[in-house]
Length: 402
Image (tube, rainbow, N blue to C red):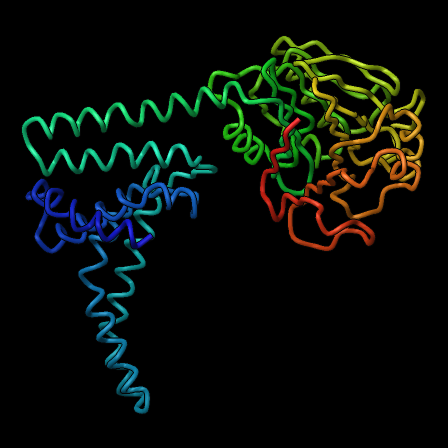
């Protein structure tokens, strides 16, 4: 990061400082230096720390002037540590400086938009940013035709990069995206013909951030919203869900709980139609074939894991993604008999904390099947899973070609 901040400070600080003559000299330089460093490293801060702080230059300007005094006082108090009473008296002025620093942080942290969260900063955004920043700096250092050319480059280059990236994004081949939403499951299927969201994970904020990073800005409507289970790990994130869906798919059993009903009702209030699915049915949406392998008719919806909705989603080229929700072992055994083929990708039930039933393992898993575990935090998988299981707690959001 210093490789970008140092040149930015050298090149931008003088011009920024010249425009800050209204500020006291003691604040002007640290404010200008911080602004220059932040301009030069903005994509890296957004990528590594996932936040931007517009208030940081002012905070640094107010704090940096007292840092030499704090450092010097710290060294002096270290020497006086052998004389505690003397050190206590000498530390009194330092307490005042520390209280000032604390109050600056306390007050500025409460300024609106003091910290702007950046859940995801794509690589193409960084390229577009620097393709504009470099020529813009050059324009400030030149004149005449060279200046005009630099200004034109600063405008055209990021537009070309952004348009190319958005075009590739909008026309991406079919994908299955296992969203990193915490201790639960949410899978987004994207293709040229639309998008399907299967479950919403436990957190509305996490789901909103993940979908904002994966869906193009103009794709506000989902072709289908699928609710596989009534637990909060599957439907908690759908509270206040603001993406309208054309269809809501739910298991055709009497599930307990109210969260899933609320999510379905909110979707229907926005115009969605509700379809109840049971094992053996097939539906085609957004170019994907959804093969329902659970629940069976009459399955007990009041038993955890016995009557959840399990799907085998097949892409046009034949690749398949098996989402088994959180089926228990008995329901998995029954679902195995419904499979029409193996699984290219398989999302492990309950984050991989238990083994698959032997029948389902034999019917669905081959040597080339990629297993995925949606997990909130690092921890051991059940014994017997191969070491190449992809995990959202390690990989973050996992994108798979379909």
